[in-house]
Image (cartoon, rainbow, N blue to C red):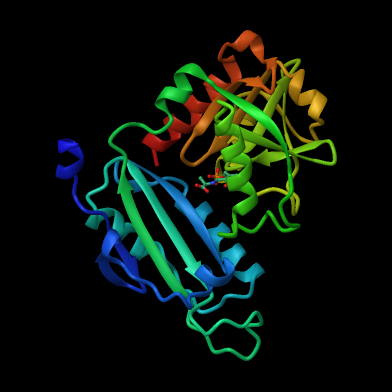
Length: 287
Ligand code: PDD
């Protein structure tokens, strides 16, 4: 509690105004609030530097363009500045852009809107993935009930929240989503399996987010001599895999040691998951 009170206030930027995050007020007519009409990014900061910044910015530009939000220039300087204002050594940055503020009507056709740009940076006092990386996690499978454009990093994450909450409710840490008997991704991560030394991850499509760590690992693991395939993974392949691991900016690469009631790799961390995490951590030091 005392430690909590001594922690500094998180500073946020809203349309370039710097305000303590817990004092920031935003109109209820922001379309993010009314419609979930916006997109976001989560970046991991190592040693005060945002890792894979260019990849995150490219994906943000792609998300914005996919939903027709224009007029957002480069955010790189603002991101570096919010990291520095918050004195972040290890931490994360959240960036959210909504279409703008207007009285509630569904169509934005003919509305002249200014995007609202929110960002804040928070320190990590403990490494957020350290414990999971040590023990591995349990996952459940869950029907993927999301919309048809999961490649857009939309702030509309209700189905993801429902799936992850279901996992937590029954003592697991992640929900692996299944669409028509194939794995798509985790509720907030991408999924890899290893079978007979071949690494597989679902191919890019409108059903998954093109994860920055996913692409980083496809390249890095291939460079280290692994055979990596972007191919469909059936639910049975998932349950019978030699290894399963999930990836994200915050979780890095985490071994999944049980899916539903099926132990994976005798509930031990697998060598590929360990190597994948080491590759991310190694690269983060050199970024
Ligand atoms: N989410 N798929 C989904 C649905 C995600 O929400 C995320 C990350 C990923 C992994 O993407 P990346 O490797 O670029 O972090 C895949 C972030 C961390 C979040 O919503 O908090």
